[in-house]
Structure formats: structure tokens, C-alpha cells
Image 1 (cartoon, helix red, strand yellow):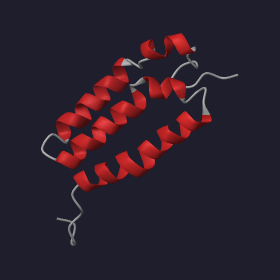
Image 2: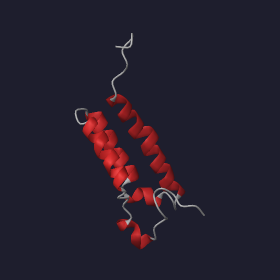
Image 3: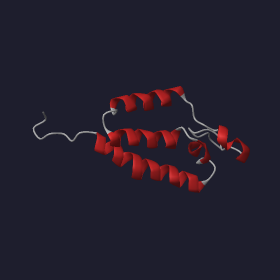
Length: 95
């Protein structure tokens, strides 16, 4: 069995302590939050990414298919549209 990014599947008693505190992940989320700090949709998207990748939901998705589905729905149906709203659309003519 190969390891997942979110770590090994936690036992029921370990779920509350299964937070993903990867420094690179936290730095990337912080930088993204700083870059999108003026846009509510962008900040909401970063918050959803934090829930998906930092919270115990990430580790739980290694064990339960239903948690993996919730994880992917958060990323695809919630975070992606919010982040897309935060990024300005390109102007015609390239300027």
C-alpha cells in the first residue's frame, strides 16, 4: 500500500490530532491568502482549500471513500469556482 499526501488513515481515536501541518502547504495557503486578500471569493476559496488539505478530513479521505468524495467535491465544486471568481478575466487585446 502506498502512502498518500494526507498521511496514513487515522484510527478513530486519532482523528482529532490528524491535522496536516506541512510547512510548505501552510506557506502556500498563506501566500495565496495574501495575494487574494482583497477579494472575498478568493479568501473563501483559500479557506475551503485549508479545510480540504489541513483539517483531519484530508487524512480521513485515505480511509473512507465517502470522505474522499467530500474532499473532491470541496475542491471541484466549491474551491475552484471561488478561486476562479477571484482571478480577473483577461482583457481582449492582451492588455
